[in-house]
Length: 113
Ligand SMILES: [Zn+2]
Ligand SMILES: [Zn+2]
Image (tube, rainbow, N blue to C red; front, side, top):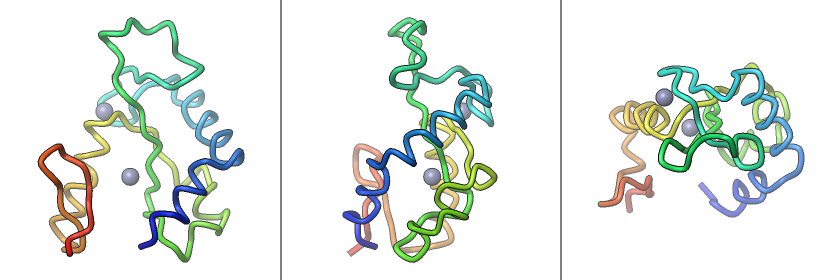
Protein backbone atom coordinates (compact mmCIF):
# COMPACT_ATOMS: atom_id res chain seq x y z
CA UNK A 1 0.00 0.00 0.00
CA UNK A 2 1.43 3.34 -0.99
CA UNK A 3 1.27 5.71 1.92
CA UNK A 4 1.73 8.73 -0.40
CA UNK A 5 -1.62 8.31 -2.14
CA UNK A 6 -3.50 8.09 1.11
CA UNK A 7 -1.61 10.96 2.64
CA UNK A 8 -2.69 13.12 -0.28
CA UNK A 9 -6.28 12.06 0.29
CA UNK A 10 -6.18 12.83 4.00
CA UNK A 11 -4.93 16.32 3.20
CA UNK A 12 -7.70 17.03 0.69
CA UNK A 13 -10.36 19.66 1.33
CA UNK A 14 -13.11 17.18 0.50
CA UNK A 15 -11.95 14.78 3.21
CA UNK A 16 -11.54 17.51 5.81
CA UNK A 17 -15.08 18.72 5.27
CA UNK A 18 -16.63 15.21 5.33
CA UNK A 19 -14.63 14.38 8.44
CA UNK A 20 -15.97 17.47 10.16
CA UNK A 21 -19.57 16.53 9.22
CA UNK A 22 -19.13 13.10 10.73
CA UNK A 23 -17.98 14.59 14.02
CA UNK A 24 -20.73 17.17 14.14
CA UNK A 25 -23.35 14.47 13.48
CA UNK A 26 -21.90 12.42 16.34
CA UNK A 27 -21.77 15.49 18.60
CA UNK A 28 -18.01 14.97 18.92
CA UNK A 29 -18.50 11.68 20.76
CA UNK A 30 -16.75 8.43 19.96
CA UNK A 31 -19.24 6.16 18.22
CA UNK A 32 -18.30 3.19 20.41
CA UNK A 33 -17.36 4.34 23.91
CA UNK A 34 -19.23 7.67 23.65
CA UNK A 35 -16.44 9.67 25.22
CA UNK A 36 -15.84 13.17 23.85
CA UNK A 37 -13.03 13.52 21.38
CA UNK A 38 -10.90 16.47 20.43
CA UNK A 39 -11.16 17.63 16.85
CA UNK A 40 -8.97 20.49 15.60
CA UNK A 41 -10.90 23.68 15.16
CA UNK A 42 -14.22 22.49 16.61
CA UNK A 43 -13.71 21.26 20.14
CA UNK A 44 -11.36 23.79 21.69
CA UNK A 45 -13.71 23.87 24.70
CA UNK A 46 -12.55 20.47 25.90
CA UNK A 47 -9.95 20.92 28.68
CA UNK A 48 -6.48 19.92 27.50
CA UNK A 49 -6.10 17.03 29.94
CA UNK A 50 -9.40 15.52 28.82
CA UNK A 51 -8.68 15.64 25.12
CA UNK A 52 -8.57 12.33 23.36
CA UNK A 53 -7.77 12.31 19.69
CA UNK A 54 -10.60 11.50 17.33
CA UNK A 55 -10.09 9.51 14.16
CA UNK A 56 -12.65 9.08 11.42
CA UNK A 57 -12.49 5.41 10.50
CA UNK A 58 -13.40 3.85 7.15
CA UNK A 59 -15.57 0.80 7.83
CA UNK A 60 -14.50 -0.52 4.47
CA UNK A 61 -10.78 0.07 4.83
CA UNK A 62 -9.11 2.42 2.39
CA UNK A 63 -6.63 1.05 -0.09
CA UNK A 64 -5.00 2.35 -3.27
CA UNK A 65 -7.92 1.20 -5.41
CA UNK A 66 -10.77 2.78 -3.50
CA UNK A 67 -9.13 5.91 -2.12
CA UNK A 68 -10.42 7.99 -5.03
CA UNK A 69 -13.80 6.26 -5.15
CA UNK A 70 -16.04 8.81 -3.43
CA UNK A 71 -18.60 6.11 -2.66
CA UNK A 72 -16.06 4.56 -0.34
CA UNK A 73 -13.63 7.23 0.76
CA UNK A 74 -16.08 10.12 1.20
CA UNK A 75 -19.33 8.27 1.87
CA UNK A 76 -20.58 9.12 5.35
CA UNK A 77 -22.25 5.71 5.56
CA UNK A 78 -18.80 4.20 5.38
CA UNK A 79 -17.39 6.46 8.06
CA UNK A 80 -17.37 6.23 11.81
CA UNK A 81 -15.84 8.69 14.24
CA UNK A 82 -13.78 6.88 16.86
CA UNK A 83 -11.47 7.88 19.66
CA UNK A 84 -7.86 6.81 19.28
CA UNK A 85 -8.29 3.85 21.63
CA UNK A 86 -11.37 2.43 19.93
CA UNK A 87 -9.76 2.98 16.57
CA UNK A 88 -6.70 1.01 17.62
CA UNK A 89 -8.88 -1.81 18.91
CA UNK A 90 -10.69 -1.93 15.60
CA UNK A 91 -7.43 -2.25 13.72
CA UNK A 92 -5.97 -4.73 16.18
CA UNK A 93 -8.83 -7.02 15.33
CA UNK A 94 -8.00 -6.61 11.70
CA UNK A 95 -4.36 -7.36 12.37
CA UNK A 96 -5.26 -10.66 13.92
CA UNK A 97 -6.75 -11.82 10.65
CA UNK A 98 -4.48 -10.10 8.14
CA UNK A 99 -0.77 -10.49 8.56
CA UNK A 100 0.46 -7.57 6.48
CA UNK A 101 0.81 -5.15 9.36
CA UNK A 102 2.11 -5.09 12.86
CA UNK A 103 2.47 -2.59 15.66
CA UNK A 104 5.77 -1.05 16.58
CA UNK A 105 6.80 -0.37 20.19
CA UNK A 106 4.82 2.86 20.28
CA UNK A 107 1.64 1.32 18.95
CA UNK A 108 1.98 2.65 15.41
CA UNK A 109 0.70 0.49 12.61
CA UNK A 110 3.53 -0.42 10.28
CA UNK A 111 3.81 -2.81 7.34
CA UNK A 112 5.29 -6.18 8.18
CA UNK A 113 8.33 -6.65 5.97
ZN1 LIG B 1 -13.93 5.30 21.92
ZN1 LIG C 1 -9.41 2.96 10.72
